[in-house]
Image (cartoon, rainbow, N blue to C red):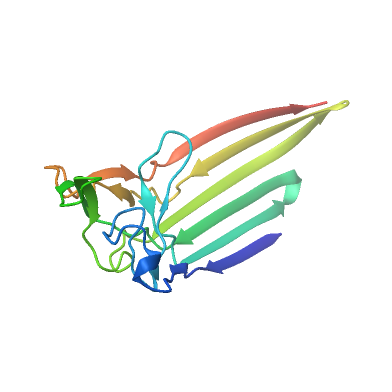
Length: 183
């Protein structure tokens, strides 16, 4: 069995005129570039304040081979374009009477510079054993087979001395042993 998938994306925003922009200052939440890429804030599981531009492409391939003696061999590969690197500076003094300190986006085209392409390869070896009416599944999973240390995030605030430092990389190779019991 196998499944292949490919997706592409070019999510852009357009403005009828300059009056359509609430605040003309380019920021992480609103780059305000007519025809420019859309940025969205991440949500969930503790990662807030991260703004992302979707990758332009993603490729997925999964497969399962049922070998003799009931042994299952499976693999999963995902490749996607790296996220954009939206460099910005916060606490920028402005003449705005409502909001004197602003966060300003420092790149004109948020999609021009990106992190490296992310490729992840996972593998599984599994076998099912039957004992009367019960079944036991023994699984061995290997995640990040290639042990890639691809950069997933950097410090984009250029006001900080840690600007451009790596904040997140892919998890290292992990071996998981599993036992499932069904009755």
